[in-house]
Image 1 (tube, rainbow over the protein chains, first blue to last red):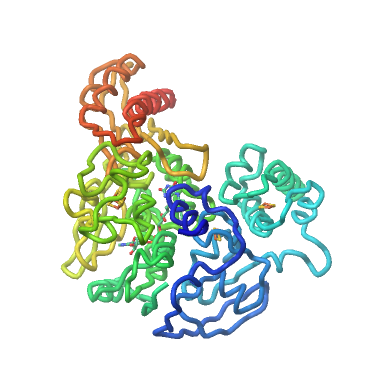
Image 2 (cartoon, each protein chain N blue to C red):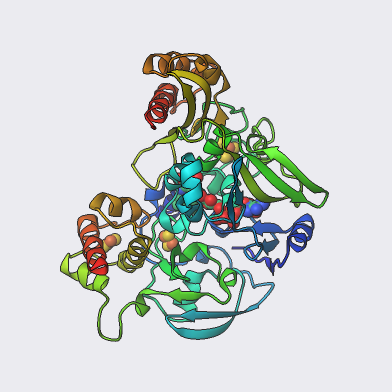
Length: 192
Length: 325
Ligand SMILES: Cc1cc2nc3c(=O)[nH]c(=O)nc-3n(C[C@H](O)[C@H](O)[C@H](O)COP(=O)(O)OP(=O)(O)OC[C@H]3O[C@@H](n4cnc5c(N)ncnc54)[C@H](O)[C@@H]3O)c2cc1C
Ligand code: SF4
Ligand code: FES
Ligand code: FES
């Protein structure tokens, strides 16, 4: 068993085992099997409409990365355990790795690439830089998307609340204090 | 992931017909897609039920009624649920992560599959995945496994937090299948592993969970959920307890207790409840009664700690419930 397999085997039992590893399709180990079906799909990603024909097995995450070349959204565990793949679907934060694209025909998706206004960073992006809220940066796009959800849900009024409501995002570098401070700052700016 | 045929159901009858013909229901997908990717689950047909009008929450004087497609986060945030059944939001918010709760449905939550690591390891023996292949957990790493309801064929715990609280609250399920409609207590949804651990629930082929009814019993407002785990969020329970109390003049009139993390299904603590009725709502009574919870426990090599943790968790949950004004 490889290190990755060992991690994946235990990830279901203990979420922390599934930390961001170098992105690699978990499916790649198995022999590729051709699809039995191809379905039409329309999604709006960061304001742009895309019409695609997809294998029903395609996840929203792989659709973004492989089909739309939006690689800002990261693949950590591919099991719903790390949060690196967090995007907003119809305004709500979700794990793109566990969502099949065909479940979201007609959806509006926002990824990290759609957060800034042109060259102007979103206040949460600015806050991440100001608070040094990352080290390697692998979890960062998921943290920011999750942070946007956390703030809009109204779960960012104290450091304790932010920690609890950001716990679906694992940071292997342990940048948590900076992440919590950045979300707190952006939430405060949002309220004023 | 193995290829499968995908169908979107526009009506309940269409969904039920597809499922009766062998398709698997797909709700939030947070259990099913994960296990399909691991090839632990290999359905040939999938019927997406997300467009069925089962995403509702209704409050009446007698009960809270939750559609099977209501999402964990929606139910947890619902004002009627928070007021009439505070145990449910507390329990839901203790489970999974905010992202998962935005997607995970109430029906899917009850039917989520075990978190035993060997269940997901295709090269390990597992009677639940491959009947007759053996159980790797019995002589393996079993600290997270069951001390109640296990058999020599499977010792995995049921992972749902919500199911524990619904069992405590005496909730029922409305089901619709190819042979019509019926209602069952949530407790009767779950089977013990016995010699057939691959059979986990009592739904008939094609049966759809339509909604959950949670009666507003006199104990519903004085109810708490305590989840003990290796870290304080985003982790499954080692031991959990839901406790609901109806107290008059300091005396326990009625009490409901169920435990999670210990049983092969959510475990109602009938004997503990019986030992509490008529007793003062105080720690001394809780301790005497909770001691009964371990009577039938059968610990494995690594999970003996649960035998101590179970009564302690029950006592704490009862104290927390007792403190609710
Ligand atoms: C990393 C991680 C951590 C988690 N932590 C927790 C936790 O701490 N506590 C907890 O309780 N849960 C936890 N979960 C589990 C999560 O709550 C479940 O995966 C989720 O609730 C399943 O709901 P779903 O709608 O996504 O189900 P799906 O994956 O869509 O379906 C699950 C099963 O139910 C069947 N099904 C779905 N709806 C119906 C219906 N209406 N009628 C009949 N059959 C149906 C499907 O066919 C499938 O077999 C965790 C999950 C992950 C990935
Ligand atoms: S405990 Fe159950 S799920 Fe785990 S290996 Fe044994 S049979 Fe499989
Ligand atoms: S990649 Fe880890 S949660 Fe999706
Ligand atoms: S994982 Fe490296 S910054 Fe979070």
